[in-house]
Length: 144
View 1 (spheres, helix red, strand yellow):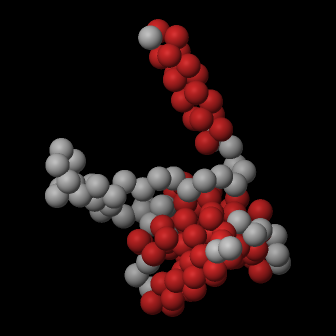
View 2 (view 1 turned 120 degrees about the vertical axis):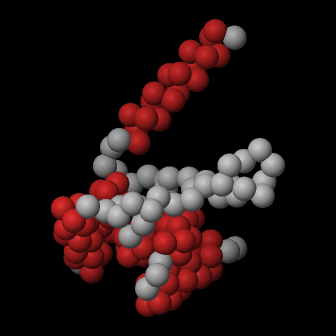
C-alpha cells in the first residue's frame, strides 16, 4: 500500500513538472458535473474578470499566436496561445488558433478537443462559426 502511494506521488509529481513546460500538450480537462448528478456539487465558470494588465498580455499573445499561425508556424502559434490561456482560459479565439494549428499539424484529436473547449466560451458568432468548422474538419480528418 505504501509503495503504491509512493508510485502515485512520483507519477503526479512527474505530470506536474511536465505540465509546466511550454511545448504543446493535451488541453486541460473540463469538469462537466452539474448539481443534478448525485453527490456532485454544481461547477460553474469563474465570474471574475481578467485584470486590465492581464487583458493586454492576452491580447499581445493572441496577436503573436495569430501571426505565427498565418506564417505556417503552428508549433509557435500553439506555444503562444497556450501561454495566453494560462492567463485567461475563457478567450475563445485562443482555442480557435489551437484547433487550427493542430489541424495543420495533422492532429485532429487535439484540434477537436480545443475546438470543443472554445465553443464553451465563445460569445462571438464569427468565432463560434469558425470553431464549429474547425471541429467538423477535425472530425472528418479523424474518420477512417
